[in-house]
Length: 261
Image 1 (cartoon, helix red, strand yellow):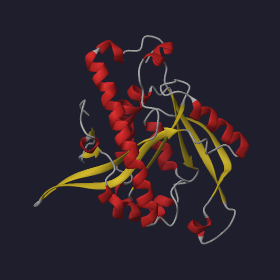
Image 2 (cartoon, rainbow, N blue to C red; image 1 turned 180 degrees about the horizontal axis):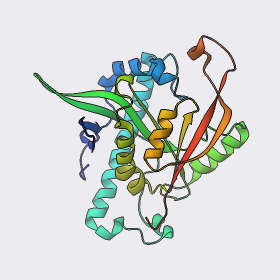
Image 3 (cartoon, rainbow, N blue to C red; image 1 turned 90 degrees about the vertical axis):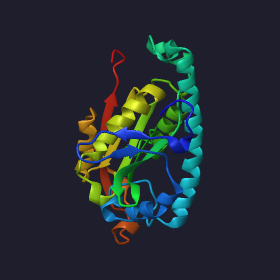
Image 4 (cartoon, rainbow, N blue to C red; image 1 turned 180 degrees about the vertical axis):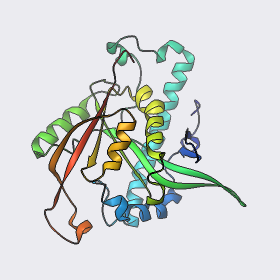
């Protein structure tokens, strides 16, 4: 992304052996594809956050929120890039304590993943999934008060603070799963946004215990397995035929940056 571009022009190419993949801003026109994806059991059974069933109203509310965040993120990133161009040394961090001497992105960042295809009518950018980063929700902490305390402490930290714990979330529509797309997308997002512009030193990835594919994605990207917390999350009864109280374990992986890196 070049300095001064609009949020609608944001585009990060993702290296892939056989497919042309890019990360872009959310688009209102993605609505139907998002709704189909999040109502597919191969997707929603591996996710905790989105409502289920996922409706047009859910999508509209989410898009309103995330498009506003995108404009803010893009403006902040442009300001950071302009500062770095004006003073190249401004982007360099000499010691861990120097982080407070420059601006950082400090909030939620999400990017749709698109497959670019050529057709007789031109180029088609097909929505195939989503990847994002936000301050950690501590999904695996069972005690509600402890979870809220940890989250509040983490949320209070100033943007760029190396003590912030970040969390990755992602999903792909089923026909694109298992094709090496998500590890490439995660590595690219880490390299382009999360590390250089959020100053991330700790990034957490979680997965439901049955979703070993997500664990493999994190491990391919340098995350280390920490623990599996049994019965950590109650499954939405609507996803499992109305059965109440069924729980699932959560695996936790962590990426930590050595400052020497």
